[in-house]
Amino acid sequence: MPSLFIKRNKDNPFFLYLAFDAPHEPYNIDQTAWYEGQETWEPNTKRYASLITHMDAAIGRIKRTRTT
Image (cartoon, rainbow, N blue to C red; front, side, top):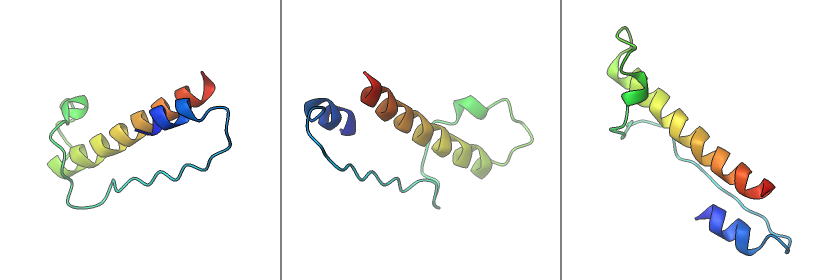
């Protein structure tokens, strides 16, 4: 959990390397509800977009942890 690590070490210098494996095939994600309204999108396009959305949300959580 990067957020927990950041909170515990906020007063100490640290280097955090956070690598995301998304979005690479195979697109293993079941949560595509954000894009169900996109009827013209192929299923893989919805999965790809969902992976990007999840990655973006995780980065946002880390950024919010840094600023609080």
